[in-house]
Image 1 (tube, one colour):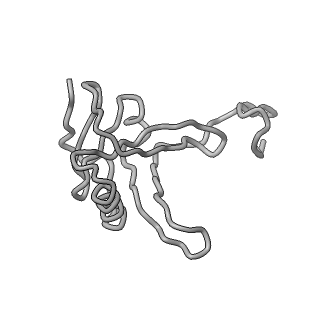
Image 2 (tube, rainbow, N blue to C red):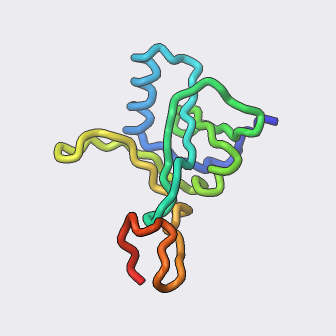
Length: 124
């Protein structure tokens, strides 16, 4: 059953809300929502992905954040609780969205071991 959250789990900055609304308007995607999801993990923590879509499943959780309909699946919500989405336009790094979540912790590993297989630098 589609669950609408009463608690605003994810906040969306005004800059991000404006950027998302502009994309929806420019691409003529009225009725679409912003899906935020876990797209992988590594030594730096959980990575998030975002997409505009209109395929909302019964298991998804939806809520309004600063005028944007946000959709999160049942697995990703654990990592996204308390997250903040912002849009930055940095002259050096370019423009893009940033998802900052207090629940996207880096993994823990035993001394001398790294679960990422050495693809990053782990300080043991």
